[in-house]
Length: 528
Image (tube, rainbow, N blue to C red; front, side, top):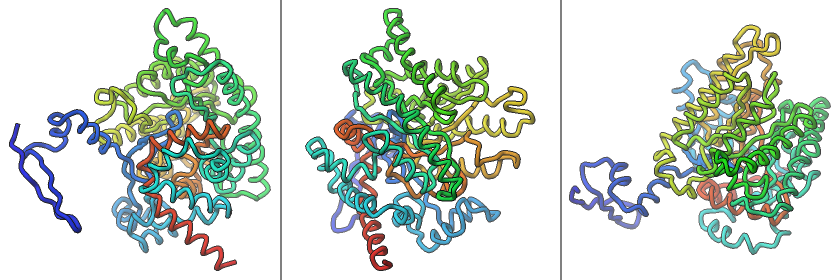
């Protein structure tokens, strides 16, 4: 082993000492020469997400942990990336970017756009947003996580629900959806957030969860869609046309012993239980097909790696049964930080082509970075590799969709449809979203009605990167918000887990958003 040398780095007010071997790549040294405890810290640093990049969706999450860098949009990057003068966002955003070149001015990564969505919040929502931004700042977040189990439920309902949750019952979630639609979000992806990490709850709780999921179809999403159509046609909401809504399923929350069933789905001893599990999934998907008015999609969220084999198979069986004849009723999720994720996506698309059904997939970076036991062998070891894998997966799905747009006679006329029926870009990463947005802008044929077409949908967590979502909506993209809902006590457990998983993303924007909130409040008072 090379002899260590001492390196001195000048920092404000102090001199820091760092010991490192010479003439070795840093990544190799960190992964192969240090104790495992040190490697864990380094691995986590590789996948650490800045404020705008926590991703969405696996069991409710995307690491960009959902974890990875965003790229601020300013005049220089626009000029370099789009030499022909095409701007990725409207002129007023580009002008603000030129006036505010510092990325720190906007935690979302879109310089100058940060405060805009605050102007569309109600006074109550703005107040709650500012308070929560302070509580999730770098200094206070660890305390907030520790104290959350002891916070009275009425305080959670008062301050947290207006920003991060849809409500406790169907009517409250519908009202949340109507409010989001007025801001430009085409619909919601709702998740009944009863936490049961090990899938071991009694049958009573599971039955209640399934009933709530079924009610989400017709009592929430179908009803909200009708409301949105009325708002759009009356001119009360004009930013975007309504699109399909989504019900996110937590695979371990559908029946008792779900964890064991998913882990052993292919073992003969579990054959009967596996069929019972598929029957529950089939009941939910069939209900969406018959009661969702053609505007509700069931989405299987991701689980930890050791359960994913069963989750992949369940979502594949349901897609094979329901995604036919141009109907997209079921979507799956793939976490692209897994080393085998691209192979998984390729296999799903090949099977769909062979068996004549369509794949609908929510692509996320990943949600279980800190809890995967075998992360060294299953997860990409660098952020760059995860980013490349994510972008390659997006490209694979988008190529299929664009090919379907271009193919003469594709679709219902002759029954020839693209293998990819729907792509859900579940990310808060500005660069990832920009790439998809630009491809749609540049490559969609003139005959494609993008106002009605739902082949590509963007998804982001409620309360995060609101400015990015609104801007995509103003550009005519379909954007849905991931909206957790349910009883306060159970949702509190969900929120605590989300804070633990996405702490980096939340805390880095804390005090900046407090400042934005206060400035917006002052603006309203002075203009009143």
